[in-house]
Amino acid sequence: MKIGIIGSGIVGRVLATAFLNENNEVMLGTRDVSKDEVVKWKEENPSGKTGLFSDTAAFGDVIVLAVAGTATEEALEQSGAENLKGKVVIDATNPIAKEALTNGVLKFFTSLDDSLMERLQKAFPDARFVKAFSSVGNGQFYKPQYKEGRPTMFICGNDSGAKHTVTDILNAFGWETADMGTVEAARAIEPLCMLWCIPGFLNNQWTHAFKLLKA
Image (cartoon, rainbow, N blue to C red; front, side, top):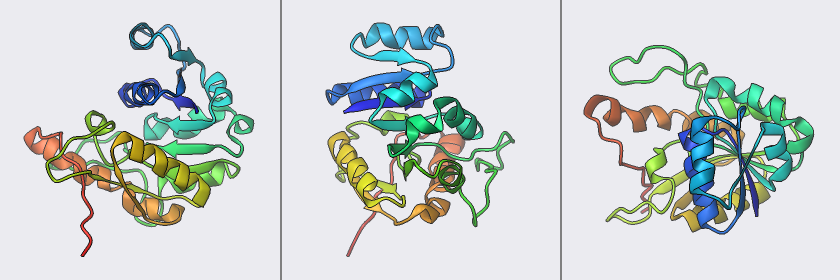
């Protein structure tokens, strides 16, 4: 597949490299292709491409949204709604507010009756959003190793075909997938980021992942 990564921070770069490792064509999207970290990524991954958000969205068959939650709508607007139309958009973002933590707990700019992905799906109705990679650290995105077996990635979205595509990607990346249903389930999935981060902020533990156990 051709994969377009919208966002050149650590999340975007790790996912871009993972998709390259799975023999996909990858373009890392950024607002500035001359940024040091983008140039370094290209040097380390010569088969990868870099480009502006609009170039990247046009390039990709599958798009990964990997920017700060506060920058999501702007990034997608720069990507171009026409470039996103009909495409699977893996939403790896969380609505983290620019406020101080409370005893290790992040602040969100959404409520329990709202989610960032719902807002994005409403703003870009022709894109097929699937929430994924939002409840674990980037160090575990690709081929996570745990003695208990494959960890669980919780996903949701309105398009069953898009979720099938993302499930295939997650299988290749070493994850078990739990489909939580339609876009409204992002109201429950996004706050898992808060829970995942608490051991990190309080005890500097950042290597864990969630596992759904079924009787």
